[in-house]
Image (cartoon, rainbow, N blue to C red; front, top):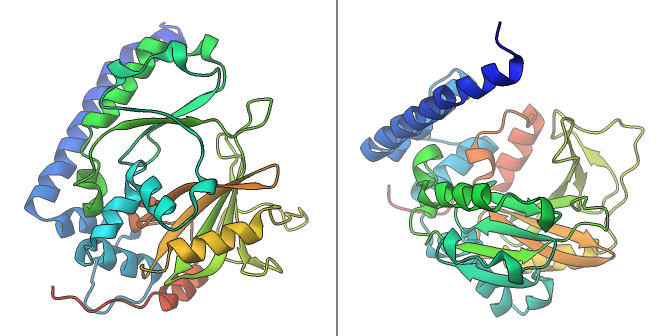
Length: 307
């Protein structure tokens, strides 16, 4: 009988082939019609047909915006490098994490010049990040290979997120914002509607087997019943020290958009900008409650566009 590790190793080529086939299938649907691709994902998640004639729920309105509202600022702000210029232009440069480098490809990265801890990000896509907590233990060859694979990925053809299509696939290196023990900071995700913060989702334990997602109202006075996987009610979660700075920045950054989620970190009372997301979870989030779908959906006012 094969040992478990050996069996997993032999299965790896099968998994890789399956993923490539799946991505090719998604790309085929996208090339026919982005709506067809999104409809496929929607049916898989919801077991019902996607109808956008009169969108009401949060995710239906997000999908409508994704497919039909192609404001050029969406591409700029979804680009993890270009968005820095947008943040600077609004006088919020002090919120940006230090930038160590910008690279056309992974071969250009000189790891010798980088500090012991850093974060490498691909400028388009989601979760295309390498978090280095100790450079001595970083597999440089594997890191370059992984970044190259991510750069080649046409992310917009996986979930139909059209605004990613025109983002140049660069790699940036930013400062690691975690604590002295290498733990990443808590993620504060602000749900913004035309320049107004409605609520904040607190993401704790993101890189563990048991992450929690808790929602708080604007004044941080009560938890909102928006997530299906929150912390125990008995657990107190205080607002970050830099909460007011985050709110002020989020409302300034989000003014042009019917909806955008803006992520921040708090490091010893200093707010840091993370990213801007227009299509969280590819617009389809089964972790949201029905109340969240209803309330957040009511907050999105769809712009008038010709379809």
